[in-house]
Structures are given as structure tokens and as C-alpha cells.
Length: 477
Image (cartoon, rainbow, N blue to C red; front, side, top):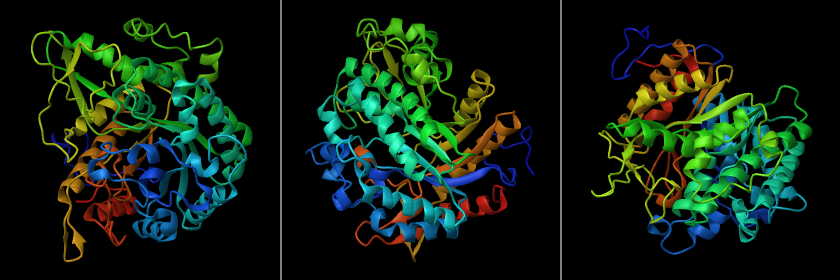
């Protein structure tokens, strides 16, 4: 067994042993895989509208069919069982439960997720349900979306409906997936649905998503009947590095927007003072009402950590061409309200097919940092993976780069464990190739390949790598 002290400097270790209770599984999101957007009373979401708007998605792709998981869910669950996955993190499509985001529940939608949960349990797979992975009902967006406080109240009602229906069986409940993306990419940069470019709107969305999280946790705890159910939220943390003497200030500003705008209210019950000061030219934050922070700060049993790459920043000199290599699709707006004088530098490779740098040391750094900031907070890696252009050869997909990526990041997770981090598990993104948001079907993250023409599934070498890890709890040679 390779120990931390003698481990490979490039994180390419093998033989590292995880404890028997370290959870290994995979993750997906509803709009990216389900398809069947008009079936069984599902209402339209902002991603239906956005993807059908010309010019928004590469190749004009939509999630109308995606992986057809809505019809093929049993086949996909059988695949999970074949791989020996111990947990599956899926998201529930709010428009399947409430067509317009309010009102009575759509029984057909609840029944679909009930069958899915039962199917997971029948196969010995732990259900981890995410209430919101970005598919806001379009009717709520028409009324202001996450800029509107009412959306947080409607989200709490939705959480109570789902909690009552599935709360006797779901193991872990996650309120939000990556509210940073929902707020800043959806309302600031315009790269994600609903595609707005409003600095004020982005910050309003930050707060109302935080409020939705707190209210939803309370609604879940009031409606869920499974005594040992756990409660969570998933954040996509930015690991921020510097380049010159101006970088500490740039790091502070981006950390406030990207990380502490969420951990502050959720885990400490306050917004960082420097965040409020940095954005004072945009808003006075008067949309934060008395009592909101108490509502937001609710205990979470596990904090979900999504990690893919790092960013490098410094303060812009105002003269040279400003670099904006933050890893996100550039459609003209900015996901960094109040920080136009920060620049994001191109980082050294190698890169994934998304153009993201591969930096497993960043994952170890992040996990240790979270332990230092929140010493008693258990963590789980709820997304980590890589897009690469795969090829089918003789009915197999030999995705050596993805296997290497996963080996290095599982090694990083193991090293964090060795450093005392309370890390409960690791969910690989993604189970299936799928609709990759603004990039359509041009990027493949799956450990299972999907032929979008035939819907054939092929387990990639990376899938078998994860299967061996789940079986032996040891990084394969």
C-alpha cells in the first residue's frame, strides 16, 4: 500500500485502501438524462426554453430525448448494479412534480421517482436525491425566477411535497446543486438558463437560493419519516490560486463571490462583510430581510463538494488585454459581479475536453481547507469527473485519460482522509454521457457511453475501474 508520505508526486497511486463504509457511487441530473419532456404531465423548465432558443446551445441540441432515462431507468439501474455502485445521486425535476412550480403535486411525476427509489433499494443502492439541479419551472421564471423571493417559498412547498412522498426511503436529501451556477451563470453571465446578464439579478439569486436551501431543509425535516435520513447541500467550490503580488486581493474577492457567499450564510449565518462591501456599487443587499439568515443557517449532516479544476487570478492592470479564462462559457456577460478588475489567467495543462486544467492536488487542498474552516462538518465528493472525446473500438471504450483522471483524484481524496478530513464518500460524475448544458452533446463525462442515435449503453474502462474500486475499496493497479 502506498502511503501519503511516499505517494507519487503526480497522484498516480495504486493500492490505496478506503474504509468499508466509504461510499462509492455515481451521479446524474434530471434534465441531462431523462428526456420525455412532455410525458406524464411534466411542465416546461427554464432549460427547455433556453435550449430551444436559437444560438444558446452548441448544435442547437436540447434535452428533449437526452439519454431517454425516463423510459430506460430500469436498464440504467441494472447497469449500476452490475458496476457494484453503492450510491446513486439523482435529481428530481421540479416541473414533473409541480408543472408551474406551485399548486398540487403531479402524481405521475411522484410515481416515477418512487419507482426509481424502490428500484435502487431493490438493488442495494443508496438513493441520494437532489431537489434542484437547475430545471426551474418556466412559470416561476416568468414571475422573476430566483430574483424573486417568492421562488424560495415555492421551493419549500415543493420540498415538503417530495419529502412526504419519498421520505420513508431516500437516504440523503440534497437541497440545491451548485447554486453558484444557478445564480451567476443563469442571471449574471447568461451562459446558463435563463440566460440573463444582470449583476443585480445574480446577487438577488444568490440570496434567494440560500433562503430556498434553508426553508427546504426545514420542510424536509418536517415531512420526511425515515429516522436516519441525512440532509445536505452541494456546492461547487472554487480552488483559487495566485500569480503575482496582486493575487491575494483577487483571491479574496473571488473567494467571497464563489465560496463564502454560500458557506457564510449556510454554515455561519452571515454574509461576509467584504462581499457586501465589494458589491456595494451594485446593491445594498436590502433584499436580505430580518430573520432570513436564521432561516438559512440549518444544520447539514454532510456538505456536498463538487470539484473539477482550479482557477488562477490576479488584479487587472486596466491597460493590457484582460484575461477571462475562468473555465466557463463566455457569451458576453460576467459571472463575477463587482469584480471586473479581476482577471482569470490561462492555466498550464493538461486539460480535459472542457478546457479545464487537471489538478488533483487542488482537490486535496480544497478538502483540507474545508476541514480547517468547518472542523466538525462531514464532507462528501458529490461530483468529480472529466470529459474526453471517446471512441468505440470493437465494442469497447478504452478511455485511458478518464481512468487516469479518476485514479489521481481518488488518490487526492485518500490523501485528504489521511490528513484527518471527515470524507464520507465519492460520487463520480457522471454515470452516463449526457446533455452537457450549453455544450449540448459535444462533451462526454460518462463512465458509461451512450449512443444518442440508438440509446445503446457501453460501460467504458473507467466504469470498470470504478466498479473495481467499489468492490475492493482499493485503487486498482
